[in-house]
Length: 531
Image 1: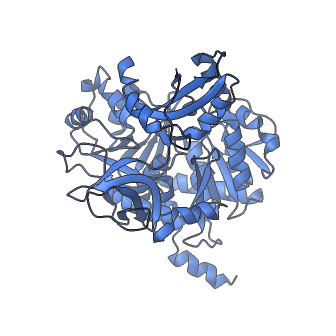
Image 2 (image 1 turned 90 degrees about the vertical axis):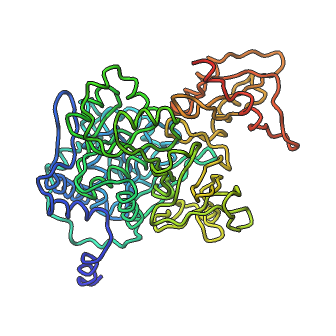
Image 3 (image 1 turned 120 degrees about the horizontal axis):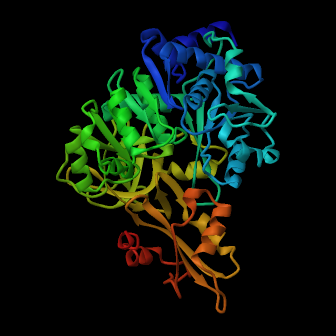
């Protein structure tokens, strides 16, 4: 490659890592990241952060990890995790944030599927990864982030030592094209294997800027990183805040009272939480003793908010609340329900963001008028490049020249999108996707089980609770504890059923498939009745 090609690329490219160089120049001493750990307030300015990201990039290069290689990342929220994530971005390395709550089989599959060359993992999680180390054929380097002080095995390199030993010079000799892969985010599909959603530098770049406009993220705003940073939603929010030079306060765990203290202390202005977290704040007895006047925008997502709670929140925080929706394949923001429709009730998703075309389509590829139910489809520069190593699934998701969400909805008389249901039986619980067939397969392995179907039922805390309906074989016995123990041994914690209901029979279709709709109607109040 000619030198002038690289120079030209540096002048006009879209590369996510470049935003940190810009913020280091325009807001060098402004605070970028804050974390409270062991009674100490850790923080990095934008100048310090950019230098550390250069060191992460150079340290990975020194190990032989090149631009375009995949690096898997696993950890709870921390400054270290953010450094690893964004350092890979600067290096042109493809990041693969892992949901470390998954079971070992899924983690093994994910790392092998993307052929990760290195794994960077928090020290508290190393034992889990050591258990699958021998099954990972592509991994050449293991790096541990010292966050909790846990001892780690000798094959791990120390993350902070690598950084300190590396130069903090700006990365200039690297060509990054707009549509080069930035990340592969694995999302549970309707089968037992996760799908790798590959998205580009341009996709996240555009989506962060659109998010800033649509969600009301102003320059140098202070915001919270409470949801897992490996998750596409928090990843977008944190990156959006930093794209505009904001301060991101990182929370390792969510404690309502402690959270309110930090809101007051750090003067947080933009807060993104799940509905159940927002409602937990309202339950803090001393909430009225905190000065929460700094909050300018409340955002919730992945689930609707009940109207009484929303009204209480708006009264207490005295700010607008917006619902953001989308999916990993949209990087991830696609549609926003703005706080201008107080009279509208129900599971509204609102209108497509300014960079997204939003429509509803029938199975024949025809766009439908307002009022008719169909599949929600999108067009946008933030649509995924495709499912990694899965051209068939990619083609299926992009039929008729639109990206297919797999969700059903319709537009009301004001052209506001109303979500109806998922086309496939995906359960969304606590912000995570759980494929019902995956849980069913585990339960079917029990010797006493003749049949099982798994659905999501409304739950006041989890939005949807994974619930299993089991038919036992004649003359056999099993109890709820046995089934749940079996699931805990094979599945991630969030995938384990909250309840197991034993039934004599389940209505079926003509082809013998269990009618989940009937169960949803019959047991809609199962968890409400037990509150």
